[in-house]
Image (tube, rainbow over all chains, first blue to last red; front, side, top):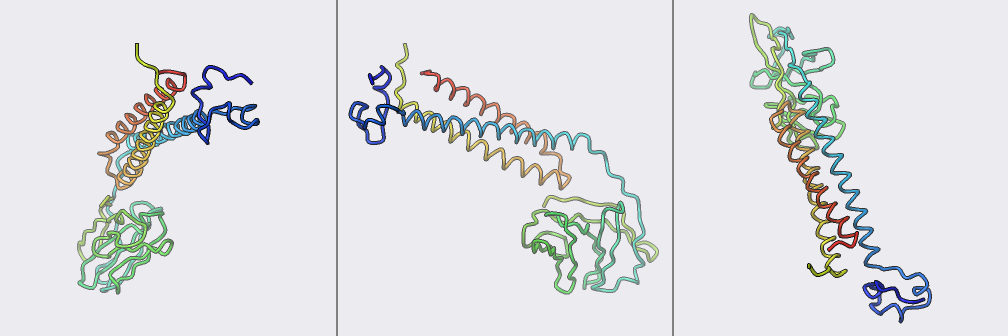
Length: 181
Length: 76
């Protein structure tokens, strides 16, 4: 087989020219460098496609944030102040029935309330006031109980903080604060 | 007239472009996860800048891909 003009640019694994290659390579002369180049080009095309998918994801977040309305937080009675002893826990739902929350009276008698859905994958966290923590049993995530911040495991965001008001012996939820850190 | 690039030079450019595109895609992945984390914490202030930055990365990637295709088409 006669060498084509561009065959002089071809490279082979052993570095020898085409004329010195075995018969099977001379019959099917693959340019290794070009072949690698093609593979890299195809891989880069795939990366650019992935890049487009990430932009689509960002656009989805933009769309959701634009069309996300303001949340309404009505005042809701949770429990009587005297019914929650230190270390005691009351379960309630706020602001909707789909939002389970926990009211905890700490050992220093301070009242705190958090959304019960773990900030990792929304499993229900279990309060452990005696150990000053809340535990998510799904992936062993831990939140400290004073501020609801993650201290161990996969969760990165704190639990949603439910704002409380104590009035006339009753404990009321008045809002929810979602936090990033 | 510009001298034609050798195969070795083209290989170097193709490798560099591939690495740069890979780096930008990893940057976009970080942007997406950080934005999602902030948005789920009801912090919408980073949503638009992150989207624009990601779009900028995509446009630059497309530019690099065009250059890559130009090189493959015997471009110098």
